[in-house]
Image (cartoon, rainbow, N blue to C red; front, side, top):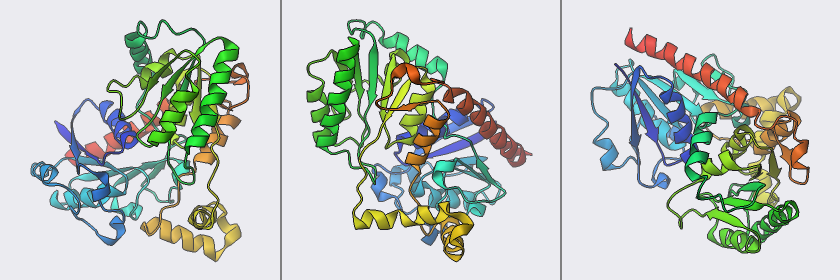
Length: 368
């Protein structure tokens, strides 16, 4: 039986995406290796390291031994040097698959699976999907909703799921913004005679989560707060909601909200526009301007290919795409004005199948 190793850096969205693809390949035995207890310990600039286990803790190192896998999945900068190290130990037989975006030249991998918001480099082994993948399908939403239905039955319909993100430059999600968001969603629920299902993330500042909860105090609600609550009803909220409000700071949450089925509205956070933040936006702007910028674009593209800088994910662009395609709307639109609620799911399923087919081809090469 073929083997796949998934290198986990502690980023929930990346791990779930890789697990979802691996689960569609039942002919392979899959193992997940968490490289470090703290993702901050892993290298941020693998382009300067090459194959390396820098930052990988002793517990993970003990698992990195023969027999070497047929395929390695990695995502995020912290895992890529370790993936190259495993590939070297495998003597070139082990195939390397990078998800999301490489922090190294794409030719260092056998396959790169990415999407437009990640500013993918142009290379023969780069598979650019039309939308980011996520870990959910209709069955998972339905099963999660069924598991929580009785516990949420006391909440009046319509139920509005509020998916609140957190710090993700150029957005800060301050306590004041959290209070503004919570008050607006509470007012919407009150007008509709409904309730709110609040889910925060590991990136949500504690003070912002407190303000959110306080702003929902006068409407019926149920809340999951990271760091406080143990059982996470996130998928159940999406499966049981009649409408979804999601903040713009997370590609994964926006994609999941636009796939779940109920109409989804995107809340635009205020961008921090100080000078350091403007400077950090220059690489993405140079990549987006194409040939108009001439030599500067070519310079930025070369740096991007080599992993010498990584432009920020184009989350605002992805939000705009969801709205243009009718998969979501901006907060303030009526929920019933969204033309294609849940419509992103079909596109994600099609792109998921493309990714799985590409990996199966690699597996055949690795095991032949």
